[in-house]
Image (cartoon, rainbow over all chains, first blue to last red; front, top):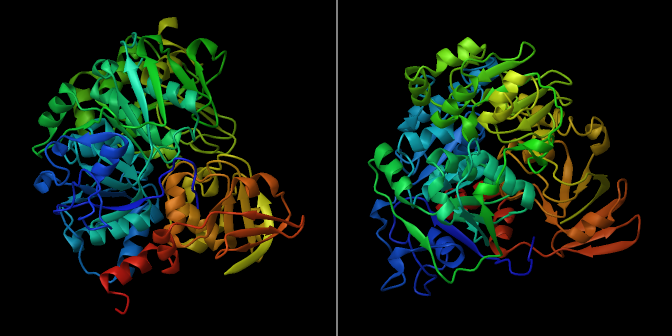
Amino acid sequence: MRNKDGFQEELIKIKIYNANKVFIAKKDPDADPDIHSVSIFFHTRCLSAEINQGGNRYGNDDDAKNTVLGNDITTPVAVKEFRKIGVNRVFDVNKIAIVPDHFTPNKDIKSAEQVKFIKEFAREMGIVNYFEVGQMGVEHALLPEKGLVTAGDVVIGADSHTCTYGALGAFSTGVGSTDMAAGMATGEAWFKVPEAMKFVLKGKPSKWVTGKDVILHIIGMIGVDGALYKSMEFTGEGVHHLSMDDRFSIANMAIEAGAKNGIFEVDDRTIEYIREHSTKPYKIYKADEDAEYTEVYEIDLSAIKLTVAFPHLPENTRTIDEVGYVKIDQIVIGSCTNGRIEDMRMAAEVLKGRKVHPDVRCIIIPATQKVWKQAMKEGLFDIFIDAGAAVSTPTCGPCLGGHMGILAKGERAVATTNRNFVGRMGHPESEVYLASPAVAAASAVAGRIASPEEL
Amino acid sequence: MKVQGKVIKYGDNVDTDVIIPARYLNTSDPQELAKHCMEDLDKDFARKVGDGAIIVAGKNFGCGSSREHAPIAIKASGVLCVIAETFARIFYRNAVNIGLPIIECPEASGDIMDGDTIEIDFEKGSIVNVTRNKEYKAEPFPAFMQEIMASDGLIGYIRKELGTEKI
């Protein structure tokens, strides 16, 4: 029930599978009035399709390979809802990904039952992309790495951090279990066309400053509802100075500003990443020059400092020089925000030749098996273990207070994760401080929130 | 449809981790979830809901995770409707999809106090504060969403669309 000024009360359905009507670049009166496409987001609000040249409808949608995603928390509810629909198969066995990553390896009997339930469903339906422990990774690190998402895709995921794939120039957004159920059955989802905000990035970040600092800075600036219902679009020459891992971190936390999605302009680095990881065709969308934005922010990356979000909201940010003395009990380096190889390398760079403070537990969780193996090959685990850190198999685990690092009453953690709500990592009276891997690793050594420059 | 109930009032940014903490997400049973609804924010929540209450909150209600367990827990605990200044978008669509009544109304959100008795008329989009003798107007849902809600949520709607409602 909202009808704010400028808010387009328009509902669309998006086909999340190949169909003739997928890429309608403009709303076409001849087209099915109920089915508009992702390109409407892109064209009217943020990114327009190159296909728009010389006509105003239908791109080459043969290439569209889009995905419905769920995890071990959200899929059980989705399966129960799916059973009520009255269909006996999913819309496409290749376009659903189920990643049991939250409470896995199963933390207790109830979690084991949930995973068993969804595994049986996946097998019954013949869902190809079901990832068992051993192949499993934190879903939003796993899907791009497996090449399941490329530029121009549409992804709905029953996980709020599904917005991560915007780093690849995909439209991806978090939904609930019922949406996942409907998506699995029909290949469709309903959406309101969002307004868009533009973030023009300039300059080059200084040493130690990462995508995590950039997105924390932005959330601190606009607030946890600063992008509510909107699309956050990241563009500008500064984007070229951000690695793909930086961009994944930024897009990942768009939801922490309330956004529907966060999307990056595709450049050479994006293409290089996609070619390295995927054989799928991709499609590049660019913003129209006359695209409308509700807000345009210019952000000078060279001026961004290491940033920490204090409890209990990601918007409670302070730069590292403002944090004061905050004693720490636990460090978590991992998650869909910061569990990728560059995060591991950065943590290792800080921890090399140093020791974790004797009062601190330092838990490092590479997000996928591939990251794990790479980190091992590069000798990073030697550095971590020599420093006194523990290395875990991939899991979301502690990020949401599941397992593998729960906080006691009154304890404080610095985590490279994405939320610091009340009770997020354990006891309702514990505290989570969000930061980059560099700050987390430095804090592990210092026993208090610290910058790597101080060590 | 009309509902009447006592108001339980909360502030801004009530997140899904306090609505239903992740430590209880190893089940999806609505009654189990309801037992722990809001417990990290308000230990008296279940007692306050009693036989039916209305939550009134500030900005960005339901921010955070996509867990549908959050609106499921609220619905199963006996809450009749949630009124907020704004809702986080995933919570918003989840509530619509599962048939938990929600209303976005900044005026009502700001004016209604904890413990007030209010009556909501969903067809008219009106909220009457019985305690303070005041009325607030909310915009009706767009037609497409009304259809979903009239179908008792998205699954009912899809069943109609696919023609499987009689199966």
